[in-house]
Image (cartoon, rainbow, N blue to C red):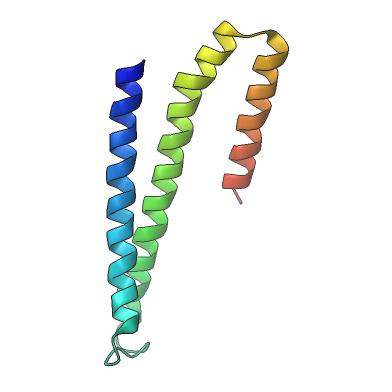
Length: 99
């Protein structure tokens, strides 16, 4: 399981680096004094939508990894009340994510 976690950690690090690059690119665009909001609104919206999609994808991947890996292990190794609490926590995270 440790190898799996390290592989997943690396994937998440790579994803957050790409998201950071997208955000910095947009930030630089807005910091450029020559840039006008009305220049190309579709390109800006496309970039914002790409960032939103990337963040949503990362959240989904993280929840999936947690549920399939750590949550299942916790349920197998813990008591039924502990397992129920972990499931409740996951459902709460999903509710917040869905907003």
